[in-house]
Length: 289
Image 1 (cartoon, rainbow, N blue to C red):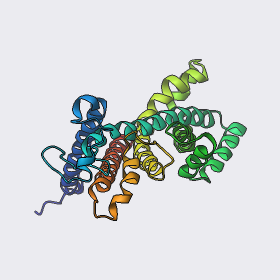
Image 2 (tube, one colour):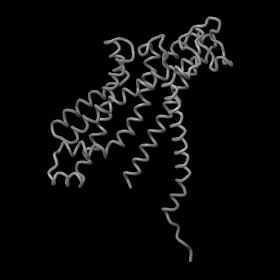
Image 3 (cartoon, rainbow, N blue to C red):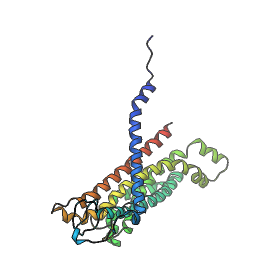
Image 4 (cartoon, rainbow, N blue to C red):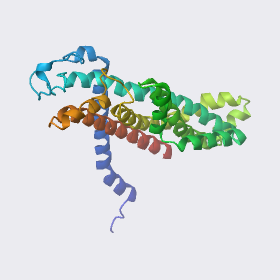
């Protein structure tokens, strides 16, 4: 008698290699992001040179034993500026993600839990903000309040909050109809207590995974803003500003000062996206189970 293949076993055999590859990418991305973060925190100790130290005898020099990634048009060590630039490159997105997540969760929780006219008004406000790209809102903020990191961070926090709010609203709307919420209501627990102490913790992992993805998007947009000369200003080291400063050297064939920070932005954004997608898959798999 021929044995009937087990579909579940077949699916597991086919998906196992994919899961291992995904986990390997997740681990590598986490290690990379941790290394960049540690280097940024301990930049004064890790960086081999002062990032603002000018050396006119070493302008646009290539990689060497002294300058591992070469120097820029002013003779400043590229590696040192990359390490110090990681501070602003990571700090800006972190502030945006924290602010937008807190604001978005609060608004989404109110809209999803209360419903009715409150939900309708907040939804229309979200739609209006969605009509404007976050980078455009940041440029408008810079035009009104001046260049730097503060105005873009505040503007992007407001621009990204509706994304978190809409996700939170949909999760809360589904969660408040579950049996455990009804049980708490029957026992006489107040609605704010149920929403904050029971519903909010259940949706936090999913919102956190989405906020991780937002981190990568914000990092790229803030780097683009600095590249346009509207973000972090010289002489402060910043990856986007470094690309902007290196434009003049491209004509002379000095590509390294521009390529290094550009590659760093791409690698970190990809690593953050891998982590965010992996977290989303794991959380989604847990929810389905």
